[in-house]
Image 1 (tube, rainbow, N blue to C red):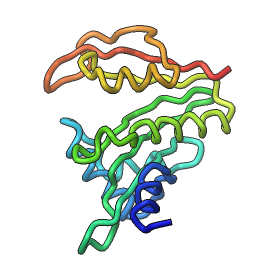
Image 2 (cartoon, rainbow, N blue to C red):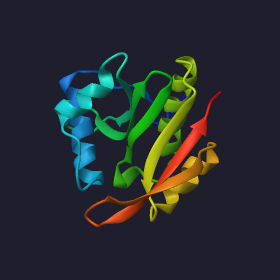
Image 3 (spheres, rainbow, N blue to C red):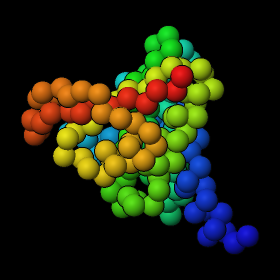
Length: 164
């Protein structure tokens, strides 16, 4: 198998987010690229604490960089038998390659392994690519939060995936 094929496959195989500074700082950089109110590296560390949360990320080697670039990540907080997806982010230069789907599937697989009953999330009503992705993997709209997002102010759809 060629090196290029190996690299392409690795991009679509998320791995657990760790508490390493490389993972947390790289994910924080991606947060800043994708969100108006990004999580800090110290906030992202919650997603590495067993029993509190979990995160998955995809990386790609970057020429001249010490650490690989985080191209996609997703996080989920866990309470009893429920998961709450906090964020799904894909680097703008890597969208449309299936990374978001791979991250969401990794979070769902983790939730099933932990015997969670449901996973919920909020998504901007204007984010049609994300809504389409979530519907594709089985999430359904269960509500709306008026003015949930700022910069710009926008409603959020509440979506849920029942696992049990």
